[in-house]
Amino acid sequence: MTVQERRRLPLTDRSAAPHTCPRSVRLEVLGRVPLFAALTAAEIRDIEPRTQARGYRAGETIYRAGDEAESLFVMASGTTKLLRPSAHGQDVVMNILGPGEGFGTLGILGEPTYADAAEAMAASCVLEISADVFKDVMERHPRLALTVLDEVLHRFEQAQQTIRSLSANNVRQRVAVALLALADKLGAPQGETLALELPLTRADLAALTGTTPETVSRVMSRLRDEGIIETGRRWTTVLNRTRLAAAAQG
Image (cartoon, rainbow, N blue to C red; front, top):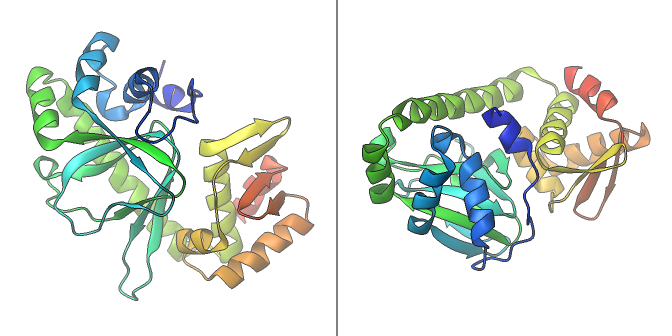
């Protein structure tokens, strides 16, 4: 099974409460993190007790941009957004993360500080892996070096894709691209539709697509009128993924 396939598998318990994330969920998400793709299930069981499960409320900051990079994090439940300060003083949402996704960095990976801020969007349980623990794991399992390099390159490419999308696509395309990515990653299938089970606001989408909440509202209204999506208070459902993908292409 590939890393991508493992990351798409549903978790056994996606509603784990902060601070009380079951060990079964902690093991499952650690096994889905690309950094640990080279490890066996037994090796992941050895790592799990050395992680710290931390709970966050919606809107609570996990770390700030510019803080010393001293931990890696893995989402166990809930959702988190990564925000990068811009030269204009407006934060840009670089990514929205769900269960099984990793974020953060370490000085030993060449990044002395966090480039982004991380903020919980909903009540979340996050696993923290300190620099000391990760360094020890690397020494015990040298084959992790290649997966670490792959992960660093993957994050760089993601950032470059975000920048290219913001500079090359029109607003309708950017909103459609963002909704499509979120639906594929976090959407809950309901028949032929995909429901986004996260409190996604117009401000979040605006920060994710480099525009204003008012412009996002106009684009969302048009997509809704076209029967592509349905929206309500802090929720969105993709009614027709094929047409949304076409809108993303322009």
